[in-house]
Length: 266
Image 1 (tube, helix red, strand yellow):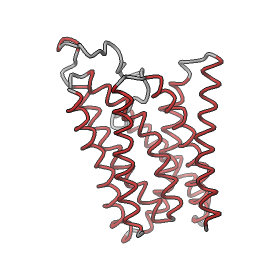
Image 2 (cartoon, one colour):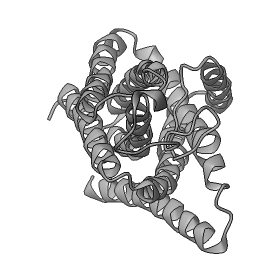
Image 3 (tube, helix red, strand yellow):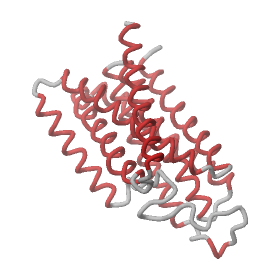
């Protein structure tokens, strides 16, 4: 299969699969499942960044400090974007911007809704986020198919709880389930657009592949450490902590396993 085909499949599969899982989760509003997926996503993101994209970038770079500087700049950039509400996503049932489950029920009236304001903000941010995810997937595949697959797995893992949170916010904003699903579906196609555009642009601008690997690493570290982990501290009980650590290790382990299987396959 060609590199472009891999990018298209990974982008479509990632967007549609994460959205379907999110819709199934929120169909019965099983917030506990979303919380479990968040823990796994943290492990997958950290595993992909520290075990795959960062080592690969360091291997390709002439000067390792060049990559670490890009990662540092990337983390600061994502912080600024999040402050500007472009990268704002809620991955769990509560967050500092809004509480998507607050007042949620199947019998809400228009008085309970915010008339779509939170929903449209989420869709705009989600579309931008998905577009950037597509670029990062393409950059990884252009380096190596194995790296592309692992990066895609990590992105899918964090997209599922993110989409579930977004879906709940849309319902809370007054959207019907059908309209919320359709809007999220259209937003998910931004991953494909970003991936295909990046494939053709990066062929001409191949010197951007290395910086994009650095930004991919920064993105995954930032989302895991800033957006996801703080939410886990809201459940400090021993049992909850043990569950979270187990699922984080499972996420890291699955990325490590996929990487090893590909290495042995080669």
